[in-house]
Length: 211
Image (tube, rainbow, N blue to C red; front, side):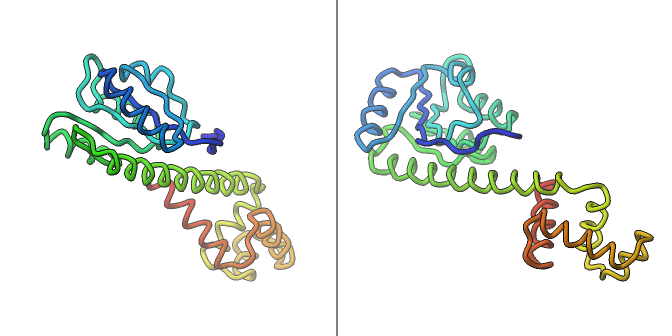
């Protein structure tokens, strides 16, 4: 997904149908310098959702219309990476477990303890920042791989399998010198300083396919 992964200021998104809860959370979070945007329903947040907006989501579990869990499912379907902190006034362990199984960052029960919430928000934003940095680096790696020519892709495949230049020359029906030239171009385009680094890149790309 080719999007801007970084945002200058992470935002805490608050989704709760209770206006008093939203006001309280906004006051608390803004008191520590956080940027806050609140929504009265899951549908309103989903309509405004943008993948590239960094931060975290504080989400009420039980709301009229679309529930917090249903919103989480919608976000998962869109490939969202925003960490979700669920809050609920109900001691509903099965729903909390389901939320965590679906990838929620945390689950806090109302009434919320201010310091605990602030700590979890800080941790969630730190995770989001790390994830976005990693995805940006992966996108750059994917773009470098896509820049290889068809022949360079063949050399990439063989060199990351550990094939020597002589063996690659035989497999590709070309001179060893030509293989060396293609190999040098692959190293340059992939910005790899060693074979070990090139192999690590290949592993990272393969792992992304099976994730």
